[in-house]
Length: 92
Image (cartoon, rainbow, N blue to C red; front, side):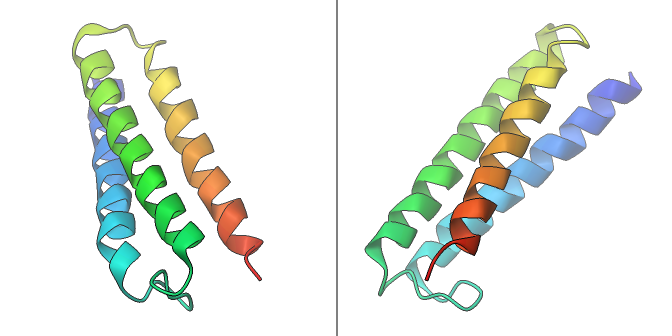
């Protein structure tokens, strides 16, 4: 039961991150301006879409999957967020 509760918190975190990325893709984001950098804007929106997809998949897994299947949500969500962070760190 505790695993499902923690997974719900992680899914809420993923959805919040997706919302922030999507809503800031048309304005100022940290020190960057996605309006001036079309690639950044597209990456932010693509990442937000992937995070929403993983969150929906995570809800389904949390409701009908096994405890071990929750690892898929954790792994995918973490890898997507890490990949975006690495991309953001390499922008010149």
